[in-house]
Structures are given as C-alpha cells and as structure tokens.
Length: 112
Image 1 (cartoon, rainbow, N blue to C red):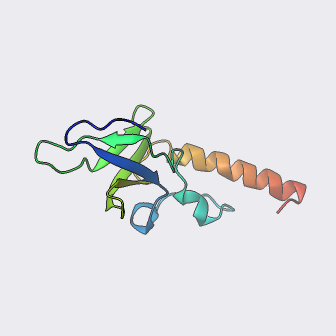
Image 2 (image 1 turned 45 degrees about the vertical axis):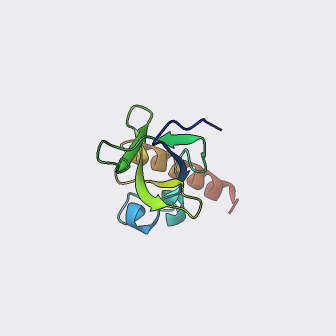
Image 3 (image 1 turned 90 degrees about the vertical axis):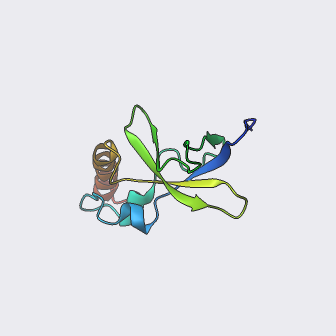
C-alpha cells in the first residue's frame, strides 16, 4: 500500500455506473454489461492529489489517455471512487469490437 503524503487521498477504480455507460458504444451481440468493465477495475493502490482548491480531479487517465475513469464521490472508508468512463475513453470502441469478435466466435462454436 502506498504511503500517503499530506493531502493525498486513497482511491479505488470501479466499473462504470449508469451515468458513465449510458449511451456508450456496444456492438450487436454483446451484452450491455460488458460496456461497464474497465481494464483497471478493482485497483486499490491508487493515490490522488487534490487540486489547488482542495477538490479531487474529475478524471483519471491511463495508457496515454486511452482509458478514462471519472470521479464518483467517496466510499464508506473515505477512498475516492473513480468509475470507468467508456464514453470518454478513446480505446473503448476498439476494445468492444474485440469483445464482439470473442462473442461471435463462441456463438459459432455453440458455446453460449
């Protein structure tokens, strides 16, 4: 677990909530629940430094900006919760097209 410096806040990355995934790209044949999944969901070794005004950053990016998580408040233990934001993540469409290929392969093989 990372040592916190003065003012820093522990954070956790979570799957998208309704506000983040509503209207996000979902190819035909893929269950909409797949849209919620972010590549870093569940990571808890994240530390966030508040902005100059004391507020936490609205977004956290990974992979050179390809994956975006959006601030969604704090949990019961005081950690900042960031949720996967598929509509804001440039890599989301490509990832979902890959997921669609996997679902199509399983359907062709009769594995459902």
